[in-house]
Length: 164
Image (tube, rainbow, N blue to C red; front, side):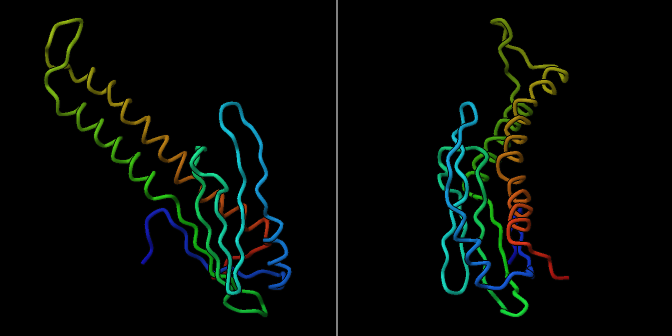
């Protein structure tokens, strides 16, 4: 079963399995700082049949980086089955908040304007919907887009080619 926003693909690499493991072992968390966000890179955990790459500290950062799980299928040429999955708990929370805000804006009829309670006009409702669109945009920027970025990062790092 393929979950939404996840990527499941099989890749081939010109590198051998031992070279791939060496390259994966080089992925160690490094720290940096970008204004208010602390940035932590990926950390790899290698097992005999594959690997798992996770964000080193996902609780302190936005965007939330996806989890990457790979399994070695074949040795010569090296084929790897890789799954990129976002953090579904945070994804669900942002989506639920956005839908809840939009529901309230569309279906509440008693708004307070300068102490006067009255139903909002259509223009006021449409302009207030931006309050619901902002979490939806953050939801995409913080959870869905990093899946594609992680895929391109890993393809470049491990010299992978997708199998047709």
